[in-house]
Length: 246
Ligand SMILES: *Cc1c(COP(=O)(O)O)cnc(C)c1O
Image 1: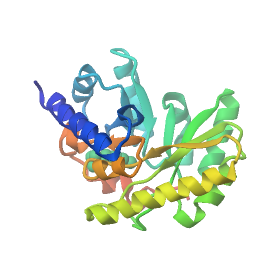
Image 2 (image 1 turned 120 degrees about the horizontal axis):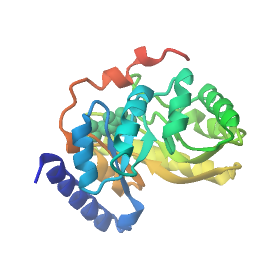
Image 3 (image 1 turned 180 degrees about the vertical axis):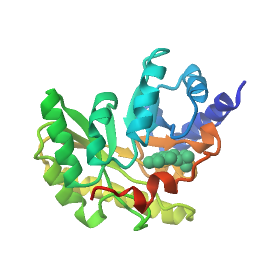
Image 4 (image 1 turned 60 degrees about the vertical axis):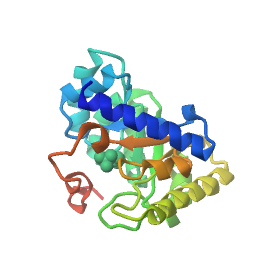
């Protein structure tokens, strides 16, 4: 058994156990594999081991990987990275869910592109629950207002919320981030905005997915624990320098 397959076995077992312990149905939690910088051969291993849901952080990488993967199998791609308004075209083309809508301007750019293509798009609103400067996401205080503003674009179906938990933190600190996300979900749900369903909570990564499942995650996003360490630091994807258009 290869490394990717072995890692997947372990993670699936941990997901089973976490669901059992939390009294949740296993089918209510999806595993998304975060594939930034991961070479195609490893993606194929994951696919051969039965995985079908992948997430990319950059429009360019999504565009490159999509056709290569699609020729082997139908897999589903989500977009999980910071999205610049001038890159929405490729993302709208290849992704079925965008996890990282964190500002009105991006919603506007998506809407314009979708109107052109006569399409609709499922999205999540990304919230920065850890107050860390280095990460994207709308502030928790602005979450309800942003959801309301985004709900005015009739091309966008808001399916829920996404967050990146505090990194290198204690379980309790991470738990606090996930609970905050869940409380925002409840607040937004209460308002019954049009096209806003709020059933999806995308939270939990390699270091904190068990806590995330305990706190109600419906999608966990795992990279390192399946594919091994990345050769580029996360700051390449997450840091302030990537904020070029807002
Ligand atoms: C890289 C990434 C992940 C996965 O992180 P790991 O710690 O490698 O599991 C999850 N979500 C987002 C948004 C990411 O950029």
